[in-house]
Amino acid sequence: MHLRKIGISFLLAQASLSHAAPTEPSRPHQGSHLPYQTHPERTSAIKEAFRRSWTGYRNHAFPQDTLRPLSNTGANDRNGWGATAVDALSTALLMGEYGVAADILEYIPEINFDATTTVVSLFETTIRYLGGLLSGYDLLNGPYASFNFNNSHVNSLLAQAERLAGNLAVAFDTPSGVPDNDLIFDPMPRRVGSVYNHLATIGTLVLEWTRLSDLTGDYHFANVSQRAEWYLLNPDPGAEIWPGLLGTRVFIDNGTMADREGGWGGGTDSFYEYLIKMWIYDPVRFSYYKDRWVAAADSTIAHLLSRSSVQPNADWAFLSSYVDTVPVYSSGHLACFAGGNFILGGLVLGEQKYIDAGLAITDGCRRTYIMTATGLGPESFQWQDSMASVNNAQPPAEWKAFFDVAGFWITNPAYNLRPEVIESYYYAYRATGDPKYQEWAWEAFLAINKTCSIGSGFSAITDVNEPRGGRFWDFQESYFLAETLKYSYLIQADAELEVHVQADKGNGWVYNTEAHPIRVWQGSRPA
Ligand SMILES: *[C@@H]1O[C@H](CO)[C@@H](O)[C@H](O)[C@H]1NC(C)=O
Ligand SMILES: *[C@@H]1O[C@H](CO)[C@@H](O)[C@H](O)[C@H]1NC(C)=O
Ligand SMILES: *[C@@H]1O[C@H](CO)[C@@H](O)[C@H](O)[C@H]1NC(C)=O
Ligand SMILES: *[C@@H]1O[C@H](CO)[C@@H](O)[C@H](O)[C@H]1NC(C)=O
Image (cartoon, rainbow, N blue to C red; front, side, top):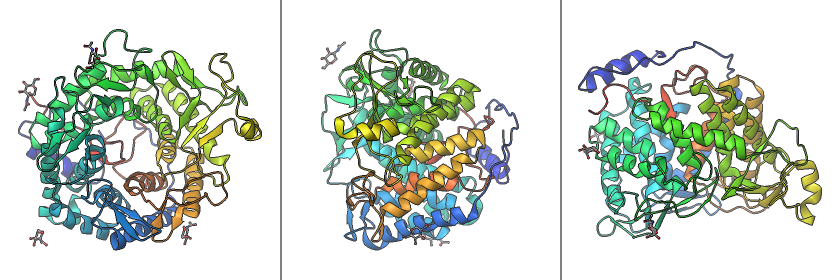
């Protein structure tokens, strides 16, 4: 157990909150301290970007969800509850932007989580809003407890999380307990009645919903999310493509898999991510989740790690997806989180093979950045595998010259301010201490700052391979503040920050898929 500066008072506070004495096993401690470097001139440039994106939002969009930086207007794409404000809170705290944090904290008690006129996504609402609220609560009762934020505002974070989850819980009232992802709140919360849900949207709830139960003592939230997860942890015999690797869609009626297509991209991605993160959260309650992550990771290394025919012996690799047992040599920006997730798994399990695979995937994703005109990576790309004889197409003629140098070609050239590549650089740096990952993250930040800065903030762009990024989409997703700027900052920032991923298994925090740090479980478990 690491006891950092503020750790002791936090532990005492936690112990007095819980009804029984802490029974947590002590976590292994190897005491390895890598020579992490802090780069103050970089962190201040990244904070400048955060302040600019926040101020643009605050002036032109708040309390709507999202800034349109070019037209200086707002959009309500996340139910009109102020998504960017809630998503930005944990980043504001970590960056020491306490004025922004206080501003957000004053707003949160006013959000009416009982009403919205647009369809509610259980998944998006969980990772952005619930994750943001719970992380703020953990941070403000932990490392930021002594900063004198208004107590009533801090307590409201948990009360609002409980109120929101209370409204969302109707999603799980299905014959199987597999939730419907889509809800309508007007006049009362109810399900739309979907036939399918997806691996990611079922399997990326359990961290937030379990944390909410552990903080409130109301175990209904943990129960429903874990019951839904049960189907994914115990698939029907024959539904696994390879051990641990599943399809994408799940029948809500009975929890069985509805197809045999999958991989680590959108639709499935964070189901795999949370398997190992739940074990970090509590290795006793979630030990089987770890076993399932190990199975999926081993199958991925055996069947999905692919070298481009342009450089068959390179250190870098891409992750293919699959249709049944036939690999499909395409991937995308979303799947680039997998590098970091493999590295995290390797660190906490003490298994170098996962770290090595994660570094190779991270390196492959970097290639998709450095080979384009903007230095930013595309939404999706394809390549020719060095070995396969099946389903292994040549690049289209117009991409042949690009492919011969880059080792991939672009199938969707947009960049939507996404974090996953910088996120993986962060894990790679924490695991190795190698400053090259800080350089890579800084290059990526500079490319974003140069290409996506527009009007009152930052915008998605249409083409990473046009020198100026093509056109602007006029949209600044809330995760740009929650994730992209947070990981950009953390990799350059203070080596002593308590929330950092640790290279020695002593993790006191685990990041949800929206990069909100959640305090790992401490104190008494439910009976
Ligand atoms: C804290 O916030 C509450 C609710 O907004 C307010 O009534 C109270 O005066 C605030 N307390 C302080 C010390 O500012
Ligand atoms: C949670 O589930 C357990 C066992 O499945 C059950 O005994 C318990 O009553 C449930 N608790 C709540 C609050 O739903
Ligand atoms: C599960 O439900 C789907 C849709 O209702 C149905 O097509 C499928 O046959 C069911 N599977 C099992 C094993 O009951
Ligand atoms: C980031 O972009 C802003 C706005 O164009 C510019 O003022 C600033 O100098 C840039 N930061 C760096 C480090 O290049």
